[in-house]
Amino acid sequence: MPRFRSEVLALVVAVAAAVTVVACSEATSTAPSPSAQLKVADANAVSSIQREGRNSRYKFHEPRDPSESSAESADGEKNAATVATTRATVNSGITFHGGAVLQATTNVVAIYWATTPIFVNGPKAGTGRGTADSSIIGFFLRNLGGSPWFNINATYTNAAGLRINNLVKYSGYWANATSAPVSGATVTDAAILAMLQSGFTAGTLAYDSNTVYSVFTGPHVNLGGGAGTSYCAYHSAAIMTIAGVSRTVLYTAQPYAASWPSACTATTVSANGDIGADAEVNLLAHEIAETTTDMLGNAWYDANGLENADKCAWKFGRTSSSSLSKNMKYNVVLGGKYFLVQTNWQNYSSGGCVIKF
Image: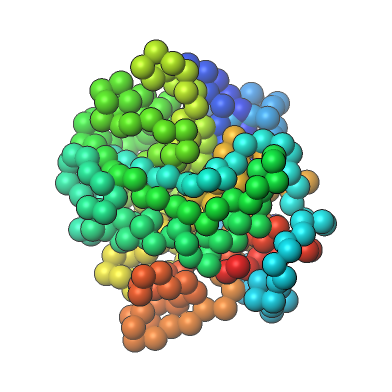
């Protein structure tokens, strides 16, 4: 049983309009039952979620199960290293269902919803370009595009057959201290959407259809209502009214992973001087990859409803460690920094979990 299982769940949330969402979640050391998974942001949505199935509201990652091996098969790595330039997708283990993907580029805006910086060297209250974010989250986002890891998504196409480009742009951030949740608080998904709506209405956030708005909160904030127990993070989409026009807003909910170390992290050692950020990048990469290839829950997923990153959740392949990584196990190097990031499913040949393409 995969450690992350994504099922798209559709639901209507009143913020400024109807909402259609996809989410992925990561949670505790023991995978929850299906009914437990559905305990998400709004209790009255559970019956709707159970009824709607994949056409419903959220897309979640399941908890980490320490009993499962994180080792990647040698065959998976070999396939990634020796693949031909013609990347066939026959019987790859994942299927296209006709929906939209982020083919040209994946833009990301980070929303740090807290009264003080969440991560070491993170931005103070206000807005700024991605280049001004000195946190490890900012560094990771600036270096993710063009990497061999994100290039795995180039094995996926849009409806016209165009391959997804290996491009990620960290457009900017909003460090939002207004009505920011504190440790111990529970924040519903509806509250997340209301906060995003306020940003668009005030002009603090600029809308872009190819942008993923990733919402981060501080330690021990239950972001979405089931963080650390039913999931660790999720991605979704909501229809909001912006400047009088209905727009589809892509977003991810990124609870502070280190608050639930046995459930939502794969390392207790930090290579980059911030265990919170080093743990978070694994969840963030998962959500960004899935939003890119299945932004509305109707594009790329398998017969069980699993998206590409779900199929490889908590599987890290071969790892290394050294004094340079401060003895943290790592499998990805971006911009000279060391990270531990799960493998992702390659849509080539018979498929497989790989760390690069």
